[in-house]
Amino acid sequence: MPCFCYKMSINGRGVLKVAPDIAIVTMGVITENKSLKIAQDENSVMVTNVIQELIKQGISSKDIQTVDYNIEEQYDNVDGKQIFRAYRVKNAFRVTLRDIKRVGEVIDAAVSKGINSINGISFEISEPDKYYNIALKKALDQAVFKAQAIKSASRIFLNSTPIRITEESTNYLPVYEPMLLKATTTPVGPGEIQISASLKAVFQYKQY
Image (tube, rainbow, N blue to C red; front, top):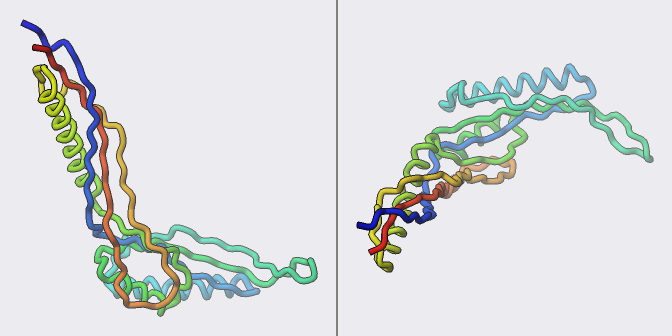
């Protein structure tokens, strides 16, 4: 009796769309002064006020992380000469918001306490692996469905359990929302995140 001596490779792809459940905002305080100490002191006071307000808004201190502290000399170009203007101090931190419905409200509160730099909002999901595994299963289901379709169109016996599965690619892109620095309580639409998984499955079959 013929054996399952032949093999076929089938590609499968699974796509899942998920509503984000966290928002990450990178915000900062920028101060300028001819005196470096004054610029630093002003910056420190404003940052402290912002962090206190964020905690007051229900943000956990572990969800507020400093990502950049920078001091630069600022110059003006006067008659072809670089004239020192001031020291610029920038303190930037990343804030994770776990209630995305309050993004606009929390940003407004931070701006009222001194935030004058916002790089935008990144909407993400807190458990990407959980949803990737679902997309991976959908990819395998598609590969099996394709193999069954080939079986139906051909004179073969198919072993529908693949003998080898290879992950080929994954795709997870957070939704990024650029933002102008202005107070607004208008809800920010996070959209949906697309997670995809691709694989190659090898099946054995035999001819009649």
